[in-house]
Length: 298
Picture 1 (cartoon, helix red, strand yellow):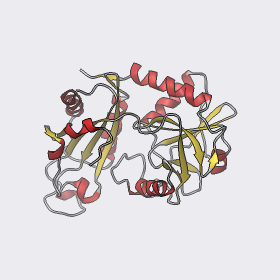
Picture 2: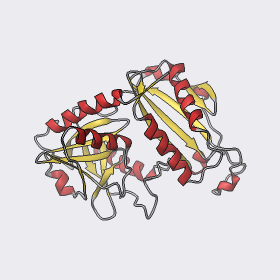
Picture 3: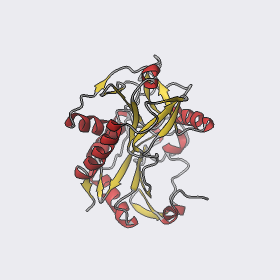
């Protein structure tokens, strides 16, 4: 087994109050995450001893759990404590990523109905040594054939674990030999990629799709705030593929990948084919903000 970072071979994982070695980190075959992807999650990024946007991530986790009618949800204090305990136990204070998962919990028998869940939620804190997963100099995209779920189907405002929609698009990207796939909504407008939100720069103006069929990401919100503070006036609008192809700059945003410049979409070079000045400026501003407004690990 080739790990991206060999240090992750010996990590400790927090499951329902217990820290266990990676090899023993397991949930029941009756857990709702196994039975139906019935779970919600967050990704947390650790910068220089601080967790970026920890509060907003927890708010979204608990909002998603509420929308899914989870019962026996642990307290916010318990979740925060579990995250801090896991990071301290692994000696992680920088260049780390936390996958925070809350499932509906273990069922008494297999089946779809939540009434079989009688023991409360399962909380998993998986912290790994993981630098930003995208090349900060630039990535390449294709447009996926599969469309992004709309609120008529599965609302992306619920940050759920049923990621088949995204995984199918990622398979297309893998087969095409590019980094990720751009996903359109049911009307043909750009939504997001299989893993990140999307921004477009044209004639010095900054645009991003409406958060209708895409997740209104925490990093997306931070970039919008940073852009406004920096004198830009970002606009949310419907964006067509043509507007992406003819943009001066395109970049993606997400907790796991930060701000990644897009150099090519569907074989079309974006701008001059290199990281643009506004993207570069926002990359640095976001990194500074993530540290300055991050919550210190006690």
